[in-house]
Each structure stands twice: as structure tokens, then as C-alpha cells.
Length: 325
Ligand code: GLV
Ligand code: GLV
Image 1 (cartoon, rainbow, N blue to C red):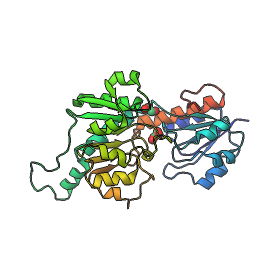
Image 2: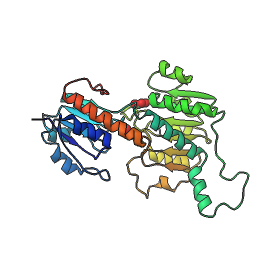
Image 3: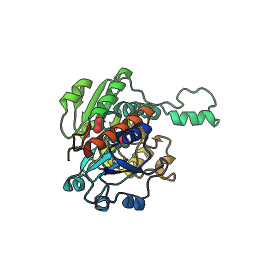
Image 4: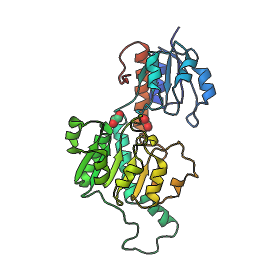
């Protein structure tokens, strides 16, 4: 009999078609994109499966892996982020893990630039003013923001996405790119002529600080009071990685006291961020509902890569993109 697979979301058609046409698996899926599979149902559905294709709303932890049992060989996530996976537990059980880097780099970089400009040039506030009668006359300092020309852009965590963001920002006449990471990454930095600095210097020098690192125990709440207090009060903070890298109370404080000029967030803790959250009351905070990779072509490519990773893993072949555990 064919290996059994559970798919935790109604993923885009390209990925589903690959699973269907493979003739290699029998799969069942949570047939909705609007709500995640309830945890209780998920724990039932994974019983005895050989493979799991998940998205980032599912916590793949010891409880779930125990519920699945010893048939489970492959977990394939339709995401580049892997903070929803307990890597230690997966490794312990010899389960292989696929993920979807690279196919989303362009989409995430584009959205990051859009969010940066929306925040620095106050686009959301501006459309609101135009629509609601705030547009009394042309005014000399009304809705002024900060420009990229002659600025210093700092990247926290230089990977492919950070490089892709810098490549797109360079034509805006950025003066200087700086970055920090656990160690210098000269081969990546060279492509964008970025200088390696400490986290402290990154905070002090950046006019725009863009967070592009993975969420790990080392980066959890790395953006906190200490960091914000070193930033210029004209600086813009952008996060398209994971909400967990930011201490949101400290960010609220920095934004509401004018310690920094603005923030653009595509990711928060929790997600969705409750509509009553204090960050939503701030004009200088632009919040998006985790859409950085949300283009039709990229989401389809992610689903296809996740499906192919799964099928390869089930055949005990090298995946296209496999996490080293
Ligand atoms: C999205 O956040 C992803 O990790 O792919
Ligand atoms: C992370 O995976 C990146 O592409 O930067």
C-alpha cells in the first residue's frame, strides 16, 4: 500500500497537483485555507502517517510526533521559517525535514521594500487623511517622513533575503549598507558592499534597520529596549522575519516615546495580533498580517517545493531543500 500523508492546509494547486499526479502517496488534507486544522483533529489525523506536509501555523512538537507514531519519516513545511518545528525532537526520531528557502526570496524582498517605504513615507496615515477629511491644504511639513537617499541601511541577519532587500534598496541611493550576524558573511556581503558591524553599531548607525534573521533561541527578543535605546530617533525599524525576535512591549515604548521614528511589521506575537493590541493605536506603526511571501507565483512555488520535498523524502532520496538537523 502507498505511504500515507496528511496535509494540514488546502495548499495552492501546484503543490496539490504534484501530490495527486505522483501516484506515490495517499493523502488526506484539511480542506480549508481559512482556518487551521484544530489541534485535536490534527493529533487524530497524523496517527500512523508516513509523511506530513504542514504550514507555519502547526506546532510540530513532541506531542504531535508521539501522536503520529513511528511510521513518520518526513515532515515537509511550506515555509522558509522553521521555528514552529521542534528540531531536536525531529532529530531524535530520525525524521527528515524539508522547507522552502529561495523560492520566496524575491517576494519577501519586494514586500519588505514596500513596507519600508509605506512606513518611512507614512503611506497608510496619508491615505487615511486623504479619505477622512484631513487634507485641508498642501502643507510644508505635513506627513513628512524619511528618505532612503543618503541613508545607512542596517540588516540584522544577512542571508539571501537580506541580500535581496539590499539589492533592491541600492538604486534608491542608499549611502551605506551595514549588517550584523553571528559571524561575518563575506561572500554574501560582497555582493552588496556591506560592512560587518556589531549589533550595537547596527543600532547606532542605521537610519533603516531591517530584521532578516531566523527566530532561534539566540535571536529571541534580540530587538529589545537595549537595542531601541541606541537607535536614532529618526530611524525606521522593519521586521519581516518573525515576531519573536522583537520584545513588543519595548517596541511600543520606543515608538510611543519617539525613541525611534517608526516601525513596519509583517510579523507579530501572537498572530493574528489582537485588534485591541496597543501597537495598533500608533500612527507610526504599520502592521501587515504576515504576507511577505504572498504572491500567487511564490505561494504556488512554495507548495510545489514542499510537495516535491515530501515525495523525495518518502522515497529516501535527497530533498531539493532539506534542513540539516
Ligand atoms: C513565512 O513566514 C515563511 O517562513 O515562509
Ligand atoms: C533565509 O532562509 C534567507 O533566505 O535569508
